[in-house]
Image (cartoon, rainbow, N blue to C red):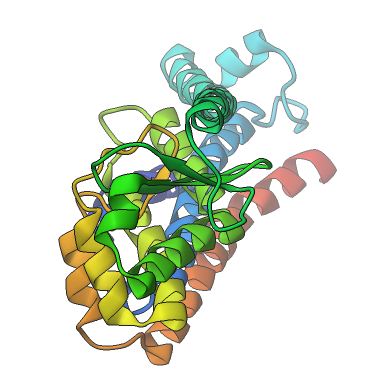
Length: 308
């Protein structure tokens, strides 16, 4: 039952639960807490998948004729039978494969993203000029309004000549504050976690809802930082001006396809402390309650098998 419960929980946390949360409107008023909730769901899904495999593995150590746990394949098959033993081994193998995929996905995403950023950083350093006395700011000779940042140890904020021409001083301060907020909070690391988890799970169970929602939420967090610096109206105008600008892979942009949603949010109700507290509480429950309710029974069984 523990294995089935963990499997059901993992499937729910990578499919239906993200789909429902992605359709909710309240995260727009509590973006930071919503990201924490998304992170707890992702971690709980991974832990549930691994726990299902461990619960299956614990069933392979059934008591033998002498009452002690069986330690050989032949004795396990003798007690469980070929069909049940094969199912247990198959599920445990799939769990290990997911773990390997998760580690590989994390490494691949990190290496590929940093390689793309390093290459693009070299290009903007060669082609872009420094402005406003900032060593980390590069301005490209492009007529189209562009605004994005390249996170990392040698971070860059990249604007275009079109951006400088189209924006007023207040709007320019707003878009710069937006990009600096991304760099300061390392939103890129948050996104890498979700990209790795999304890549690791099989296509038929994973959902893109979590990744898309978190991408929107980190932009909202950067918007909130810019609002505190320059106000909502200049930021809204700056976002609209840069909305159509193309962004290189691995960068975080001020504009993009979510601009309309974010501009409407700037004119809506402010962030809610009550919603944030509810989201933080739910995030803790997602991690704690399933672990206590489902993990303890099979941990007790393992204790009985090995120490009785």
